[in-house]
Each structure stands twice: as structure tokens, then as C-alpha cells.
Length: 229
Image (cartoon, rainbow, N blue to C red; front, side, top):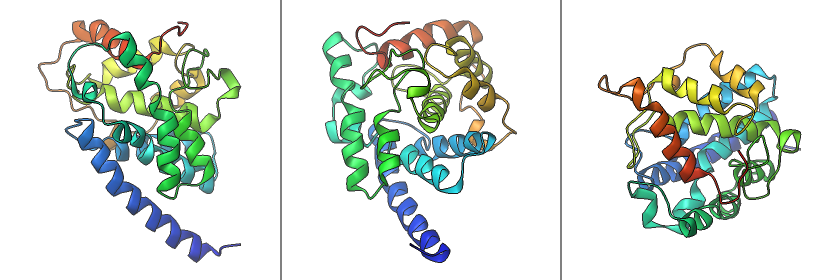
């Protein structure tokens, strides 16, 4: 059984290693600002709200840093392309959590973190992938990761759309609560005390009227064929 000092040393070494990998993943996905580290901070604060223990929160932070390593392994050009994905591309993209699970293992992530990577695109209503889990079948930490990932992605520029404002992102999470997101997780995330990672990168020219179109584009890229809404 590792001592507290050993655990802390291993924790810091793992997080530093994953930080470097996550920066490469952020660059590959064309995020102009830190993405994985931002998710980790938002997810960790949400996990505190639910009283998750230190080791569970570590697994969640590790999973946040490693969540899109599968996309890097796949190295598909459509990740950077503007516009929606075609059906074959959407099916192909749905493989990335499985490859991410493997890549997280290769990076030294614990088994719990590996499974969170696998399940970070599962939807509350069962319409996600890769395993079609629903409701409480999805571990709480994976539900937290799903919402934190969505919020961080929405509030940053992407190749296919501009960043949401914080108000637009909050509205999106509320709209999709009970479908994509666990309503309890949405309430918790939206009730967090202000932290810098919750700030949007949207420029002042972003208008609220654009939100429905942006939401449709994001959902169409993430939702696998045959998913129920």
C-alpha cells in the first residue's frame, strides 16, 4: 500500500506527463486555448460538490487530461474541418473513446480513469457511445466529465464555429439536461463558485441569436447515428 507521500509523488508525476500529452491533443484538435486542463478544473470542482473522494477526483482529473488521446491516435483530418461530419465520419469518430481508453492505459492512467475516458461520450438518455449506457449505469464521474467537456468546448473557438458566451453555454447545458446530461450534474456545474476556467473565450461580437445554430452543429458532430434524443 503506497504511503501518502508516495501517492502524492506519483500523482504529480502522472499529471505532469498527462499535461504534456493533453497539450499535444489540444493542438491537434485546434483548440486555441488550453482545453483538457480546463475540463479537469471544472470537473474537479463539480466532483467536490458531490463529495467525491481524493482518489476518485484524481481519476477524474486524469481522465479529463487524457479524454481525447484517442482522437490523436486516429489522426483524422475531419477533426479540423468546418461544417458537420458525414455519416461515415460520425461512425468513425465514435471509435475515439475506445482508442482513448487504450491510450490512457499506455500513459499510466489507473483503470478507473481509463473507463471514464471510454464513457465520456455516454448520454444520460442512452443515446451516447460507445456502449449506450444510460442513467445510473454511467458512473457519476463520467457524467461530470461529459458536462465539463461540453461546457469547455462550447466556450472556446472551434474550426467549425465561434465560442459561446457563458450565458449561451449555460443555456445549452440546461436545454440538454435529461437528454445528453445528468440534470443533477448540470445543476451542480452551473452552481459552482466562479473560477477562471468557467470564463468564456467568446469575443464581444458573439450574439445570442447564433446559439441555436451553434448548438445544432455541435450536437450533430458528437451524436452517433441512431442516437435517440
